[in-house]
Length: 152
Image (cartoon, rainbow, N blue to C red; front, side, top):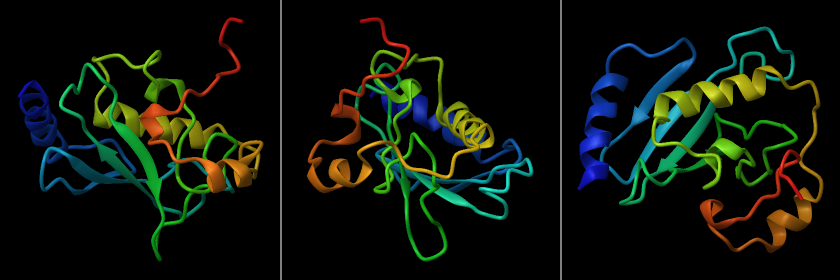
């Protein structure tokens, strides 16, 4: 029940004023929401593109991170980025169990992803993209990514 209370408050805020380049597309229930983001600077890799994000919430949200992926459809490509697989899965510590904090919310995740795209200058996918997309059967939140700044 805590997830629905928190999501209800977030939805109220999202239906009001949002940061530039972020739009709420659908939030028909407290299980899955769609948001659109656009990179607001003049990064040539993402100019004039709008990207769709799917947020899936578990019953432990916000203690547990939502599952966030880019969604491809005819008008929304999956962005080319070294931390975004071609199936829309995002490798970002903020979305991982170890990097998530309950103070985060849908809006802050969208802003973080805008920032991640804004700072990118490489028109490439993560190493091993094709094999990962072909063989991965795990849900994004169950994947144990190793981040470059993890201590060994």
